[in-house]
Length: 329
Image (cartoon, rainbow, N blue to C red; front, side):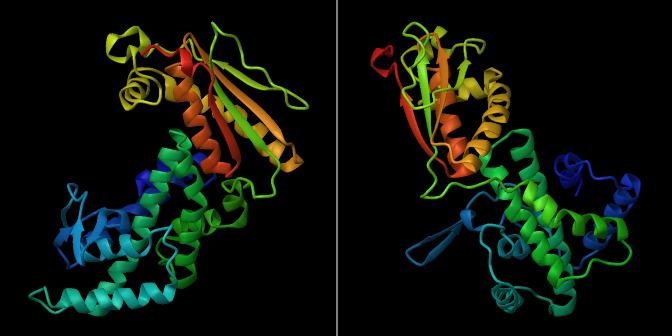
């Protein structure tokens, strides 16, 4: 719940009684931890961690498992934002889960208590997901997580349409109803290109030794970013014959340089222009990334930027590494 508070809610700058919310979080936490179901809890039970092969089912990524409540895992699976299961499906699958798990437990399940705790864990899981989307999207600026925020908010909205938040948590309830309003959801819903959208964004990596790529579009213009302020992997023998397309170089840039900080600032700028051009029906935008050899830093930045724009705006892109024929091999 604090993950949600710090990495999502507080970024919205919504005025609320912070101490009252913390007190209500403590109350909700005590209610959930007082449950009767103490079994193995997967903790990340979602479709991408389930493998079906030749009618056999396998599970991965459960190293964070611990003792906990069974309703948490089924809540995680059924309320995945991108799955967008209907309420009817969720209800049927929950009943099926309870029926099946009953045969595995020594004690009889109190269905009403189980479902009450399940609803609490659904809410907890939805908040945790929004915290993750906020951290990965708003702080680390990963496009996949940014585009997932509206889905997460709609998931909470769907939950509130079928469940009532307890009267003893009024501050929390008011916050939840505010964040699922049209104003907040719209804030995180970027414009999307369609097949009819004229805009094509050309993204180049280049070497300053060879010069900045030309732009022969009708209006010209765009961005040129100098990557030479980022530590060059090409200085080191292990990376000299690799490029920004190779994972060792990508790991170097992400872990040993300020590349992520640099690109976050770049994307703040180009997002403004991209959204404006989409709105105005412009046909062309050029974005250029240059470094000494056009092989490591600029290539990585161009690749990541193309991915960012496609994920966030679904816009058509052309990606060119203009000095590739001269890369050190």
